[in-house]
Length: 246
Image (tube, rainbow, N blue to C red; front, side, top):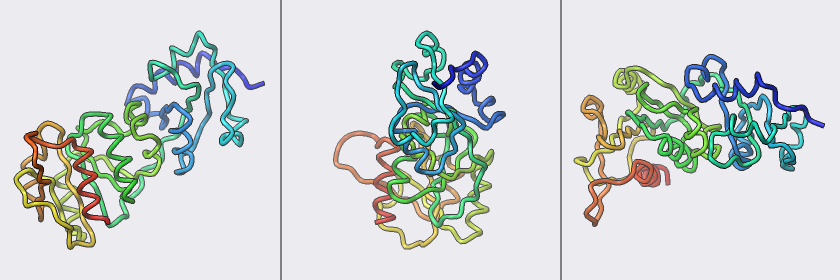
């Protein structure tokens, strides 16, 4: 019989909704069998699982029997991050910052929507791109909605958060990376000739800041035949990565 979640643990899980608390404790919260399975497969370290009272541990997680707590039905509303709790959640450890070692890097400029952020991770990982550089105005990678929308892809991402994105881009450029901007006023998108590159992706409403456009080596746009002003940032990233990696 697994132990019940304590009041102290319930309070801690609720506090993980706060960004400062997440980084102080180096922990975050995720829910759902599919998301947790993907996170574990990608090397994420689990502190413990939380199962709804009466719920059975999924078969693929039986190795974690010693780290299971049950949550009383009356306490589910205190820990869940979704309107309908999927029956399983987990407290996970935020990994230490890892250097961006790949030849392909995605740099995010003021990405505010958590759903978009998570989907950007999923899209990038599909194309084999793991490295993200983001400014401090972008949404936190471990925000509960980012974790949920990434569907576990977060576990495969290396990222760095910086206060001055332009300054960091210039440092990377000196290491031999070409700086490529997604720009509505750029040239029609084509396969890049560069072996090492950084792709700049801008704010959902306003695009890239002028300072980042000024330091880019190439600017590409995605042509369309309709009358919409622009593409969703996730769709645009998928098109760029398909061009650049396949």
